[in-house]
Length: 185
Image 1 (cartoon, rainbow, N blue to C red):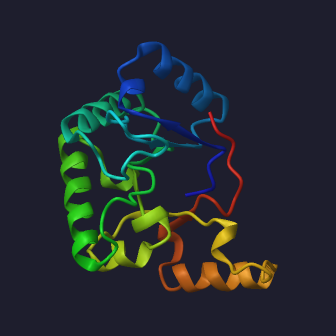
Image 2 (image 1 turned 60 degrees about the horizontal axis):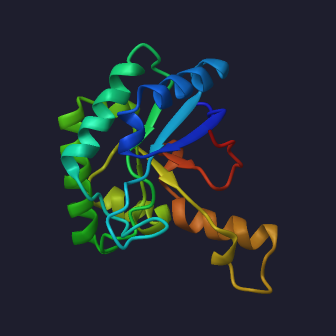
């Protein structure tokens, strides 16, 4: 898959809003379908920012992805980043299997083609290896933040070494969303 021109965020309530989806359709059309639609979750009472890093309501999430899938069925270049930064799941192999099982349920319930789905690595999408060990053989999103390199070591070589350490051997299945600057919707 070539790099998308846009990576756009949304949450389940956006998928239920016809006006929001019409705007997303216009953005996607403007870049000839080269887009990734990425889902955040809605916040529960008392949550802020990214919430708890877990899918709060699987039914709501599956319905949202089902609607997005319906709207973009005729635009196969649009990919679906199912859930942004699943930091609320344990990052060990058991946690990765639990996360993968939840995502597989959403994929099935929403009727998504796995070839269009991108799953974020564990944590802040940095541990793609755990997702690979859990059995996911589809595309994966890898996020990188500059503060993950020790202070005073912020060189191109240090960043490259960290990225290569994290994704080595996974090849083209990894989409490094934070390494390349993406325009947001």
